[in-house]
Length: 264
Length: 315
Image 1 (spheres, rainbow over the protein chains, first blue to last red):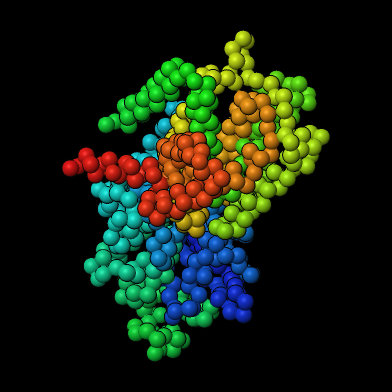
Image 2 (cartoon, chains in turn purple, red; image 1 turned 180 degrees about the vertical axis):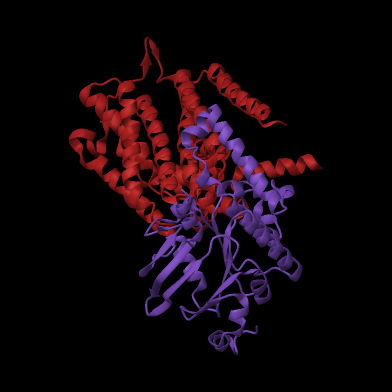
């Protein structure tokens, strides 16, 4: 019994191989391959338009890939739709926070719990003991997630009324509510001030401690270099480097890609 | 106030008002008018679940209203079935049609969905007109049986009022529970951002389809009640204008507001009655009301009335 377990631990949680995607004549991803190790924080960086968000959308199933394969926990994701991938354990946040603004903070997180709950129209109306129990557990779990990001005290407020930094945290809590194995964060530090960014770094570490693997696109280089174990660098849809932050900082191709566009 | 206590009070008052009206109102005319308000409320609350909560516009909702009426009408008139037997047939037929139509149509969004449902509504109306052998064609289908239980006639006067409003109260109760449930939250999430709802794991296609079928079944129930109350149905009651009127009820009363549906339906049912003089210009008056509401009360009348009340209470 021990052999397959070892095997599972060694297998990367997410393995991309040969992913390509074109929009018209533009190659947004060209033969991208890399693996995200279980329990790691992996960064995905690159100049603007390098195809980072496109890759996120391919992993989550928003876009279909032209070719290549995505193995998640050893299983080929094929053409499975977005919601199925969430239920397999892939959660995400958006570059421009996308909360359900008129709904309360708690309700937002509860929607994040959708894939782990089953109540349908019948359950809503009949409210048998098991339906009530599920709803109660979902509430407890959602509150726990809000408490984790430090926002349990605004649970009843409309999500759209919160300051931007908090909305970002609600979005993370919403993604965590689905009990993901892999969390994709699209520029989580964008729009945050220096203090909030530092707190975010701490939060990412805490999320990893919960056993969740993280893959993040980020422009804030000091944050990326600080929290990531591995970094993949994209440029014009191609992977040009993959390695530890130290290796990436010394990589000639990476420096060439960034020169004149962004400072390290 | 605790939500349970509030619910008991609200529904108690609601039932009280309906009961008092039914028992005290002696005029057949005003009883029937109130019954029609109930039918339109039933239609509006279903459409509000689809449009107000899930954010999916339908310009063909009257088609399901018509399907409920015609399926039950044709089965009772041509085959002589009891209306109680045709009721499940009517609901099932409307639900099945909604399922088949919704499958491709709900992939559309915005204007395209509006166009798709508009086209569907028109096609159904043309079928009502052209299948003369079964539907009676443009001149309508007469001779529907009335609803009876033993010797009690449920198609007239206060009994009809109680039956229709009983359905309204049940529908309100069901809709309120759905809105505050897992599925209701998913539907509202779709309204705010379908992309984000899918990204957090909502199967948006099935959720939209489910609420579309739900709204259709509710409309078919209203159609069934209408058909056996009037005992005569014609395509004109279920045409494009009827669909637009339903949308107007939802918008005027308030999108995503169950009690707003009651207000919108009451207003648009009673107003033409009080404004006889305008009968020629009915559509102009509707348009004007719709414009004024959109400009001054974009959240619908119900929400704004609640806000006014709360502001007055603070003073």
